[in-house]
Image (cartoon, rainbow, N blue to C red; front, side):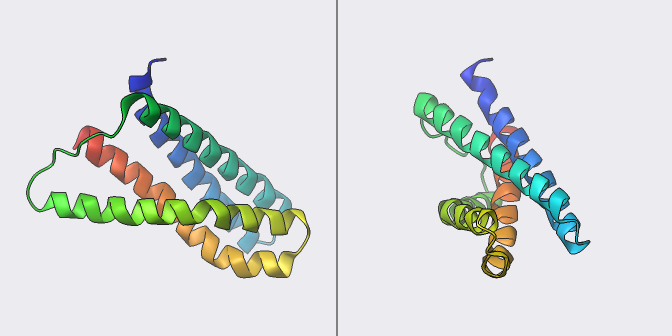
Length: 137
């Protein structure tokens, strides 16, 4: 595998995180706590692997310029800025949410998970969108 392959790997890891986040939500809504736990841990692993791969890629390559023109350019940068800001926020937020579940503080876990889950989903999905716009647009 070459460094040039990492953007596709990153998009795949974001896709996996999105699937596991969706399944985790589905299972907790059905009261299936063990399945929820497994899915959320898998989402966490996929997102952590993404972050490591992302950092390696950008350490080697630097930033990649967006070449789209016209009306799509401000759309791309709007998505990118919101993605970056929320990606910074989601790391400690997801960590705290996971920590509260691990400690068995489920009331506190639920209160913060109501914010964590949609933000994490947004970051995962927009990561995929950014990949497609940047490398296939």
